[in-house]
Length: 281
Length: 262
Image: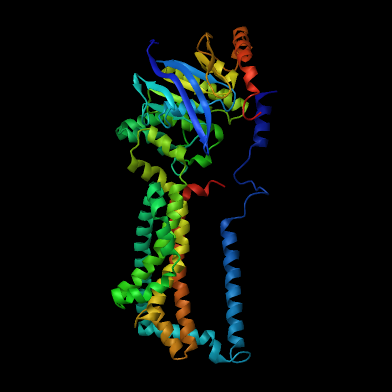
């Protein structure tokens, strides 16, 4: 066979970048647009149904109506109430979340690394854990007053346990072989913790963080509902107290917005820190 | 090659406990590895081959007898040895570059030298172009080479290998043998290589130690006088190879049925 002929076969068989493959994945963008369109349509349908049902099938007093709720949000926006109260609630939730995460992470690490500590203290931790944390709110009001601190601490306590348990099991489940290999290379304990145990436990820690987001808001909002004149929890109580259904729904929507933003941030952080897992499928 | 042993097992017994039931893994084991020697240990499965390496690495203590490294008993983790396990045990969250240079970083090798050595080991193991990949993105053979590079790059005095190629398919295995021999011919590091594969042992080692079924002790020792450099792809056809294989197989075959996984 001449070189030219071989070249022709090669040319024939070569795959070109502009070739279309039947099994090529649909572009991610197409998927995203379809997904978002369906979500928007669904939301619109629910809102329309709500709007229509209100005053026709169900008395407006019970369920208000979307246009009234929207009007309420706009009203709060212009009076500055919306951002003030959202800021306070988000501030409490985030501060409590950070403190609880840090404390839960550190204690979880100690328990996971020193097995003896865990064996001795386990029943005590379980006992405190089995207490519904909101029941601590009255005590915290006595200790810390009805201000910002009390909500932060209530949130921190709730988040602490969720992060603690996940960190603990994450640290404990770190591959023994992996630790040994790195120690044989001459690594000291801090290096082992930083290079092996922390990244290995991170998967479990993020499970704790994701679960913690809604709970962080429980701490802040319950605290505000019990004792406060500020925050979204206060808005909620105030609106409900005045039988203002539109205001109540508006406050709930505000909470959903905070929670969603919070969740998204955690997801971004997780996608970045655990990017090595992306390729594992 | 000098005659002072780098590593010596002196009448070593190792016991594991299944609950409170003692299981004797090794009993009265005596063997030594000399400087620059490539020693391979073969034996039926469950005969305590891997235990041998854990003792040498100081990861677990002997019940009786002594494990001696360069004249000193091994009492804590032995950082003079590098350990290549059956699973590649790469850090899944670290890139190839970080995995390979970790040992150098721990030993505080300056960044410039780290980069230079990384470069030469990427070349040596054919991982060039993959330094920013995560282990999950590599094939089994590449992960193995990465794990070899990670250990060899910081030049431990001695390398322990625990069936490192057993998970690879036959062709990749032979390629790995070729590469290991090529690297070893350059460095002549002392190697203690565990395997259950006689062909692999003969291809690689200077000397082969056969262990008995559990409790494991030395049953037979044999010098492999095949000339180096050896070519794993043609070695098996040589008559000398067959003679060595037959002799070792005679010693091994009775015990093989006493192994755990039969």
